Length: 478
Image 1 (cartoon, rainbow, N blue to C red):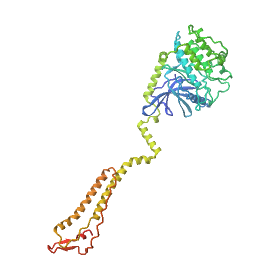
Image 2 (image 1 turned 120 degrees about the vertical axis):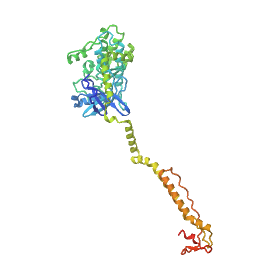
Image 3 (image 1 turned 90 degrees about the horizontal axis):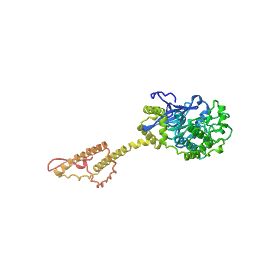
Image 4 (image 1 turned 135 degrees about the vertical axis):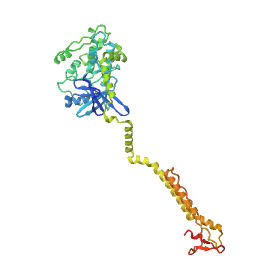
């Protein structure tokens, strides 16, 4: 594992992910801790694969990384590491994968004590059988149109089998896989993968199919059981000759007392001719599980926790530091209320535009104001109609009584008092807009017959009995 900076070190932001220090490094890329934070407190720790800088400018290697992401994203299985996303940033490519709290099988075998029964045979069988099930899922993967991708991993090795503390083994790193439609092909004379785990046909010009992965898984099984390297040499040339021609001993020659039939399974998987091997990885996994009862996932997890206690503890503490720091892309940390508000605004704009939202807010006041205006107009119209069309009094007689005089003097006062009352009602209506009532029905009074013409040149007459001056009522309205 690479050096780990403190949790306070600012991470690099890659798209919507924060990139932290390295978990592990291989020949092509380095795997980093990553973190995504989103609205509502959602966050997740991920693993981010980053191509080595000196390879990032090589189109072939960039294409290889894209191949890995594109193909691995089509494989969905509990025994395959999930590929979640791919990000391009500043000329670099990053693959975002699920973070698995565990250790590679290579790391576990390196830490495992060299004592009989380590690892326990059921644990070894469970790990290799799980990897075979994951490989079978990759071999059967299809593209978007349902056509087989014909994926061949071509780099099955203990380094590419990740055993989680949850007891599940997962295959990872499809970077050198061969599939239909891949973006780049192997250059002539360049071998991809690790020579010690390559099937003999990979070192020749023969066609490579899924049975090459079966062979590599058999090598891994042989080494896990015996705790030895199957092929070891000081040079690649010698190593290639061993793969092509060396005699392979059955595992029971090195580890006595293995169950009957286990040698047959291992040696069939290691057959140099593809036609002599298991046809599929699932077929080999089933044969293995029938021969040796695999350990339960809880037992595998306990073994991993015991063997890799130090590295798992260090890694768990680092993940806890990252999670406590809350580091992540600032654009992804907006409060959920802000996001909800902006989302709502966008919905209004997209559907009806901003005017629709504003009109919806103003609508209650518009209807309330309209209702108030209708009330004022109706009251004013009713009052005006009554004043205008009130029946005119009969012409004053020359002998009018005092009672008639009193009623004549009070009439203007009554009319004047009605106007302030209407104004007060209108003012009250304007202060608190009432619900819009239906417009009142105004009934017009019947027009009375026209009164005889009265000469108002002299609007005053003198009562001969009292000598009082009396105004002609017909002249008061003119």
